[in-house]
Length: 439
Image 1 (spheres, helix red, strand yellow):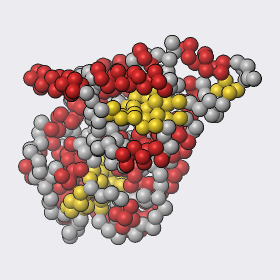
Image 2 (cartoon, helix red, strand yellow; image 1 turned 90 degrees about the horizontal axis):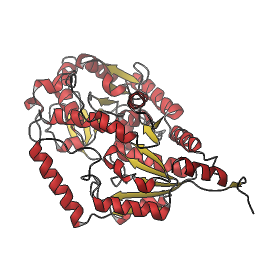
Image 3 (tube, rainbow, N blue to C red; image 1 turned 45 degrees about the horizontal axis):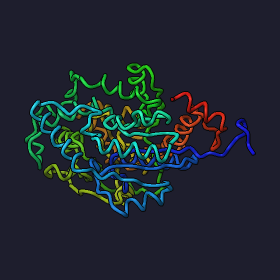
């Protein structure tokens, strides 16, 4: 029999809470969730995935659950709210609406009593080595019941900053479907977000500090968190992407993939109002195909085709000339830039969107300071499809070398190793020490 100092093969057990159904992935947060699941699985972890129907952006159904199980999860568990949980949410929503204040992060609106009890029972039954929570909204789930687990928080956006930016845009947007010409000029100025205050930032940092580790999406945000916390340990894990060695023709229109947030609407208006008029001064009939959620919120405009949701973007990527990202608000990382590069396409982006991505000006795309620079990049790529090809190929190589699934696994392995796991095995003695450290 093995003694306490002999190595015993133990797969790390992870209980991962993500508030949405991530399959099939439709947003950057969904992609991020699936990447981490796959990375943990490939490193030998047993991953129990749990969620709730309270907040899911896409409906939970049997097909989604089965597909996640096929991806190698040990189990998929979905919380169904009680009448009492729904009542708590309604009452809190009404109260804060009357106060004209946002619902606080980490409140019982996001983790009502029934959800907390349900999650606590899962922890007691599964006894995970690691509890992984996505977003500060649900930080309260990792409470006293998780004291014998290592607690890790992941996020796609720093919510306290992102929410203020969203509210600033929404206050200035007309009702949908939005005509770009009806939007106030201030919304499409590059310094629109300057001077904002973020009153919830310190509270979010305190939430992060209740966790042993924080997975940070960019090095800049890791620095911000390190400066404002005292306990949590940060590990930078950017969004990574599989590359697709397709035969790009670069003969088609430009693409603007969008997601379900007002920053994409703002980017669309910026493109229509500020950029395309400059492009049309030197080119006839430029065409941009817009895909995704933004198409449901805006009206068409000259030079724009609203294609809506596309189940498989690879055909569009194969024929497109390049991708545009006219976004200058938000936090985290612009997934559309990483995805375009993985599919061999150059990207024209504003500096604010490009700075947290692997995009390099003049090498894998064009980074602009303003609308004039953005229009110049688009015209250059439209007129030189050989340049599209060379930049697109460089971008794909960059993703293959530095932003592939191997980087996800490397960062996750750094986390597991720091906790005490040794290449899929941990000594029973180390396991006891790890438990005693977090009791």
